[in-house]
Image (cartoon, rainbow, N blue to C red; front, side, top):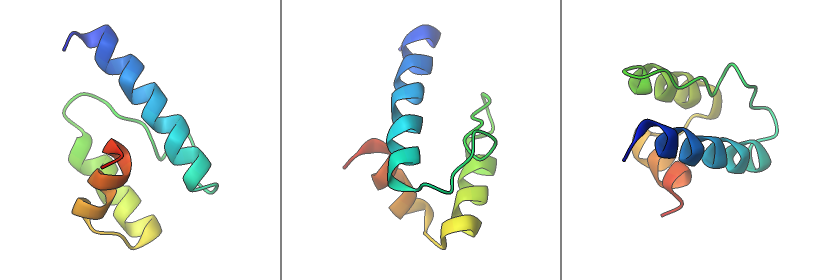
Length: 61
């Protein structure tokens, strides 16, 4: 997947997450390349979810 497609996909996923979790901020969802684990850690703390649960929510599976 090229960078533009990945960014577009992530922007779509961010909007879905914001709809599901109204307390999310743009800062919570900063996804810098190589920082996925850091972002998931923040979300785990904020919502008391496991990484597996968050991945399912993000990917819609």
